Length: 115
Picture 1 (cartoon, rainbow, N blue to C red):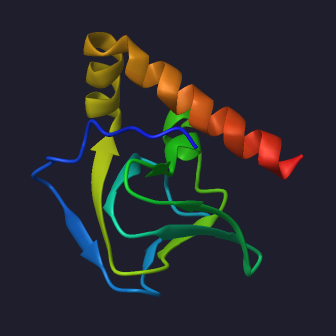
Picture 2 (cartoon, one colour; picture 1 turned 90 degrees about the horizontal axis):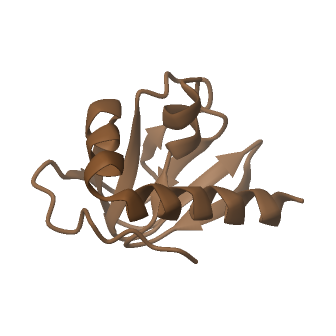
Picture 3 (tube, rainbow, N blue to C red; picture 1 turned 60 degrees about the horizontal axis):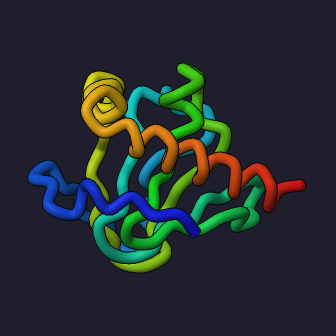
């Protein structure tokens, strides 16, 4: 799986215990999250449809598409994540073009697995 390790030294880190919800389906999607430590599950209709570990991202579809969350994300283990808002996302794309390609690869991998 494609990883994005640009956030491993982020200062704005949020801690979640195993089982704790990071966001729920239907929530506003104004940020995506980069996983720093642990494992985060993406859940749809009580079924785990994806997982992201260190270097992974979650919530990117809602951020990029400016829509509400299409699934719920919860910590499968104790996890540390950092939020990435639209402004920071756009700065990353501008200053690190390969970042945009990695995000697109992650989205493509997830779509392929759902087919």
